[in-house]
Amino acid sequence: MPMIDADGCMLNVSVEGRDGGATLMLSNSLGCSSQMWEPQIKALGQVFRVIRYDRRGHGKSSVPPGPYSMERFGLDVLAILDDLNIEKVHWCGISMGGMVGQWLAAHAPERLGKIVLANTTSYYPDPSIWDVRIKAVRDGGLAAVADTVIAGWLTQEFRDSYPEIADRMKAMLLATPVEGYVACCEALRALDLREDLLEIKSPTLVIAGRYDKSTPITMAEAIRGRIPGASMTIVDAAHISNVEAAGPFNDAVLGFLTQR
Image (cartoon, rainbow, N blue to C red; front, side):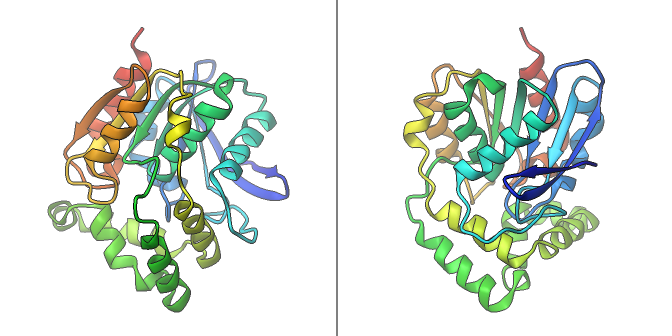
């Protein structure tokens, strides 16, 4: 796994899957490392060369001082692609990863092929929710919000049926550096990509979770409505749909990316 320098921030990157094929880049949710994509790697790696990475402030990547921004996250992605000498990738981002995908599709469209925007939004009508989250994490660390976050990530039924997966996701969240998490929350507090959506020309699939309360179906519909020609799929999952509904998620992504 190479470490790639993005303006002084060292980013942990892995490249795996099929050699010589098209490249697909995966981008994580807030509080997750690139390990969140394990349920996708076997299926997607048979068709694509797959890049995944830890966002700044997360996983094994550096934790520069915040605040961060969607532009900064987008520039980090471009630094990775430039370092790997990759001209163009398909994109699949969940939650914050979907927001970064929106920014890239509007501001660096020549670098993206098709894009998948999963369980995400372009705007928070009430950004004060992030002030509450920031204060809680500054005061009590990630443990102060972990149970609430996991309850939003995965439905109760899934957590009861697969407690080992829920525990693994919680451990991933708790391992996130506080300063990196807070700096990302500050970027979310300032999020407004509604006008950027109108600039997106990439073929786009929006994936929504039927039980997602963090970025509900109405937010997915708002994205689809502002990107010309975008399509939408709903899967039976809460916020982290690639884990809770891995099979349907993989089928939707592969079907969209491979259709001519």
